[in-house]
Length: 425
Image 1: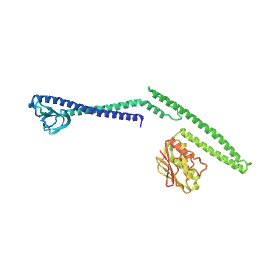
Image 2 (image 1 turned 90 degrees about the horizontal axis):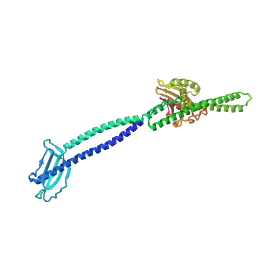
Image 3 (image 1 turned 90 degrees about the vertical axis):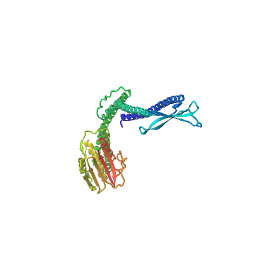
Image 4 (image 1 turned 180 degrees about the vertical axis):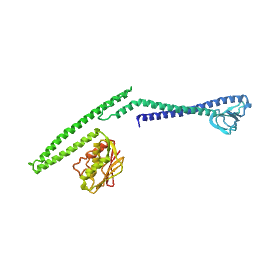
């Protein structure tokens, strides 16, 4: 999730929570005010009715009005009179409308001049108050949602504008390619922290460029300075081997030195190749047919390993074509197929399955246990190469690095004593 979206969601959730709390509080406040106003009306009506009845006892009778109705009944002498008002909500049946309507009720008592006690029950219709409450709440909800929408839109616009320097900086950082000139950073802002971030990012890019150039220079120097003396030494050893004055023991010693130097040369080339791949020094790219490479490689390897009588087969009727460097693609495919030839037992089989999305090399094995997925692509892992003293365990590591450099996936699987290496887009 993007930073601006994450921030917007959190702010929106907070604002929504606050507005919900406010909305509930506002509703109950309005409701309480309406009830309080209704109770005040009932109190005023009570005082007026009691005053009129005391002055004119003939008014001691019930009254049924559209909005206000009341009833007066005499209390027994033994019933204790209470002058405390009692309010509550109730309903009353309206014959005209043939339904019950909500009312607010006030019960009180009073004493006439003849010392007789009476109970007064007043009922005031709350339909108008409820309609008023519903209207107020309805309009409040409409304004609430409109305010929320405007707030959300405004918040998103403000956040987008506030985070625009970060977005531009990320786009600039994504455009940096190792080995190429750093693009100009155009990211104007008045915010101090963003200015510092721009300076830090530019400084980091310059440092990375210098480190890349230094490493590139080192690789080029190492490739030249190491390969040249090794080649000279190997050449002199070849001349010494041809010397007739050497005895057999001396020749054997020189041969061992020659083989050790030869392994050192190959190790040096492999490590330098890994460094070049990891530093993105991969050269020009073009559409490469892995199918064509596989056929060329298997032709040569089939002759070399003909003594194993390996059954080689190709399956799939599609081409696996991918844009990458031709030389590195050749190394990638060659390493995987060569490993299959090396570790396939006598009279075993190798299957190369090719589709438009995957390139799979599978081979039989005498080993009933799979290779370690965590170690198989690591450098100098010799578990697979225990039978090959000339191997450094770099082939699959190089293959993995090449695949990753071009955005390909290289995975290993094992099923029914069959090893499979899968290259997929």
